[in-house]
Image (cartoon, rainbow, N blue to C red; front, side, top):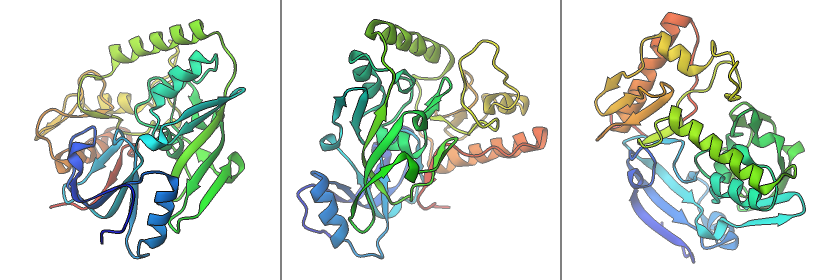
Length: 305
């Protein structure tokens, strides 16, 4: 099934090479379109019975060891544009969240909450990414997307339902770019604010390890605000600590000792080991706290078990 395309298409692509956790089996096909029109034409030609799986930079993802049956679609540098129109920021889906925050600050626009969020804009919209009390939905204006049939659509904030770590866009909908509206600010103050955020993150999170960011959603239903007087009773890390799972291991998988809501590939872990340890954490937390932790990390693909 090698369709004519101006982009790049590879058979049996090993996805472990492109996920932050460095795990995952092969995708039947791995497609990187040359541009929007190339993507549209590809989707229109692709048989309807073949599933597609859009992914970003693989920062919030466990691909199971058996890989993915279908086509994994990843947008490359043709989709990482960042432009400005007054107080609006138009960012391509593959633009890194951190880069968008920095460029916006240069223009005197406050998207500083994006600075410490791993991943790219497409994933940030789909997950309604947020921290320090701010979320994508608070700034979101519109998005250009392509559906499975190859139709180009523009969606406004009224067309999408956002909630904590979720929006109701179909899984096979491909985000091309998003427009945000931000408050004005002093560039020097905004950059100083982001430096402070980075220092706090590096002091409390295992940023030097192979992780996928926060593993579980906070049962409280909101992200950390960063305030000193913040309540932690319904934070995932606190529940994991209470269950005695900080530092727990299974094969090459480990719960970080620095921040217990981070799952680490400590060396040679399989997706099975990582997911199994995560499930063990969920069982332990439910046993001790009667709270069902929900995965924040996306898990896709087939197992080898």
